[in-house]
Length: 389
Image (cartoon, rainbow, N blue to C red):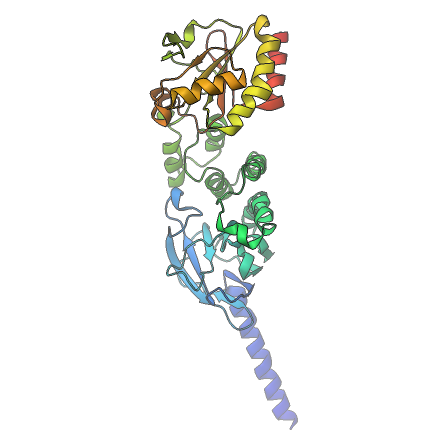
């Protein structure tokens, strides 16, 4: 009997040792607390190009792992992990035909970003219904934890959608409300500004500028580009989106000349304006934030500082002359105004490549760009301080 128990104990010990070794050899394992909407399988995807990072349906599916009844899964090394790399774990919805589709609304995202390397193990725990934002790493390398820090910068969009009533989710924007988008951008920028790790920088830039149109603050992105390894193929792919012909005017550059019609039909050349400080303001009658800025910020600024050398040129991207004219009258926007009535197709808008409206450029007397897209108190403070010099 004692021999039997000794043999049984040895067998159990051997099984436990084998199980622990198998788990230790897994580059990625974890527990997902499942919900009814999800398939009991996870897919591991490797992006092959920069635009594929954090995208739906993109990248190479390198492996899959079943999720057992307890929510456990473990990937086994089978030759796909030859060097350290950026990977994404996808948990597919039952209704999806694709293993690497991204679920929505945003708080239901089903993707986890991680860095895997030979000889290292990552272990996570998460809830299926909120996979992206509920994921915690029980074991992970420093690079993966930095990716989690970037994910946390996006939490305002998760919190906003968690607070919405179910019926209001029928009309949702991928990035949340304007206020939430601005807060997420602010947080992502703050994290990006501290990073040197290329995987985190690549991911953060994809989250920050998912359309790859780096028109909001190009100087910031160009500085981040300098931190990336020049020999990495993704660096070259990212740099292609940051070519000068795709970017708006950069700080220190001179605004090129252009001429547009005024309301009375005359032609006004911006370079004929005089002033120590010139605000080039892009707006439209149908843009509520533009109209609010006209009334609450620009009119008081113009009244207070025009005699001290401050000038504004309003450039409308309206297509309706009557709407443009009525908006000017109602807002009291009596500074110089021009519009070619071609709407979004305006050649000036296309040539200056600004991202959205209201959008503005602050220029010195020679037309050199001093600052871009300052609004509200930030704009008031800049004008006040500049004209004190």
